[in-house]
Image (cartoon, rainbow, N blue to C red; front, side, top):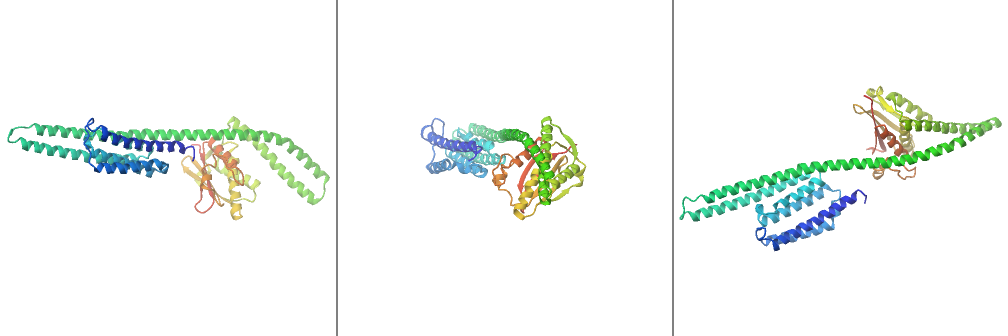
Length: 436
């Protein structure tokens, strides 16, 4: 169970306890407070309903975890709560019951915990039940007034008090109905709106908290990387001198070829260290430069061809995007290259070919979208949910490259989304804002 599910689990347990309290309240009112609150003496039928409700309350308490993250099941339980309350009210006085406002309780709970459709449905159901109870009590009063009028005809033919009293009670019941409907609508609209705003704020706070944790991880990784880069500078310089000496002292063709490969590897390390220094300075001073999208793609293609010549890139760029401007720094190119390199590795492991498709277009008028699709076996769903936010353990690494790329895009105002492709492989979708 995740930490996020713990508060929800506690709320479900509290809701089950609330059902138990409601059931005890119904029993207590029937046994000890019928005359005090003017309740109607219930028939034997209500006893069977209360026994069935007791089984339901015990089941809901025992298996309250079943409704966790299940809006449909939670709505069903609240609907049953409404039915039990309406049944109890009907057999203990109907619309004249002093506790009729408790029909609003499931509406309030659904407005807080469920989507907007749920409280509206419960409002309609509760209003129908209350309307039926109002109609029933009105018909009973009309019948009693008619009997009273007939019994008073021999004594006072001009007696009009019962009819006037019936009209007053009818207005009173109509006012009660309007009051109930207005209360239900206020709960549905107002409480639902407030709950929605709270959920949005909680989601924003959760996102900011995750972003802060991500930044702390990046800071730790950056500090360690800077220290290691500083420590690598001296060994690389020593290796450079040693390879130069080997070139002067060895004249065998095979050995010279090996030394040449060593020099190429050293060149790559030295270029990477130089880029790291420039990137560090750029990020520290927050230097952003304007770059055309087509120039960015050309530089990216050149770097991939230089560092990964075996890569088979299929790049498709929309014409309306080529001349647009994107704000970049030294971290953007390495972030994109890390995603492409992961895609190349995934395709090679699955299909023995280094094929990667890159589609560049517009998702919005001022938003660039770059989709990088590989032909690997795909990524498990539970890994996709955390990849880019945390360091994920895997045989190939810990997801550090994706984590760094995600942070780089966020700093530039963009996003990184990972999703499985319908056929095979994974799509890394990068969005970046374009200059107006």
